[in-house]
Image (cartoon, rainbow, N blue to C red):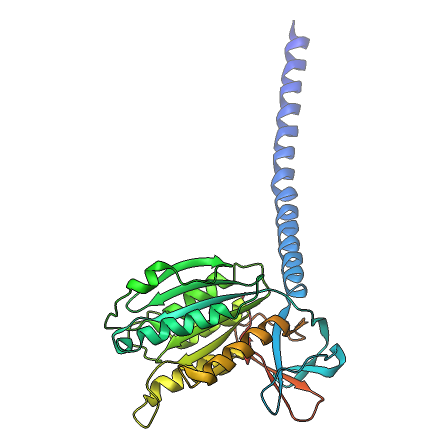
Length: 315
């Protein structure tokens, strides 16, 4: 009778020892192994993200007369980032559709110029090709989309019932257009600003709006709709010029007439035939800093327009 009880106690003690040993092993081994695997995976993901990032530039090349220069090859271009030449990862020069966002200023300072602004919008739409698409926005104290991206060439009926309001949210309008263009499949994108350049109501700063423009790959074409002459608002003109220059676009000083017609025709041509250049930055730092871009062309008497840089991602 005594032996079976003794054997039973020995079995229980053995099982308890094994349980304690197993618990100790699970605490010491699997947890660190799992953590190590997670860190390694995160590092791999970061490497993949950095190595696959591309900077895409849409470049316009014009001659000394301002005419678009066609027929250029990949070897004609050199790209520099912060002064360091970058190896090109892609180059295309084929004719391709583009998407445009037209921003019509309906603030109080445009009260006597609104009809002229509508005419300019119609003129730009008339110059688009069948495959191009455009959206139309108006902005004053807020930004409203009157027409989504479409191949239609008429202004929406709402555009003819617009009334001007006091304040101007130009930066917010540019930011909204850039974000909407960033969702488009077209690789060539334009923002056409029809405004006197006033800015007094935006939540976004000019720098923030331009950052969104750079991220979307859009080019800004700014038409100064204010009266020409010595009374023209210098500050407004400077704002419009800055938007166009930083994005690689064009500033158009005349709100109407032959100059505007010729400028819109040239814009439609260059948007459809721009040179698209891509490169992977040699500087892989994810520091959120501004990187200056310069595109050089080994052709005399030519000017190359593209965006001035971009802000690096920040980890």
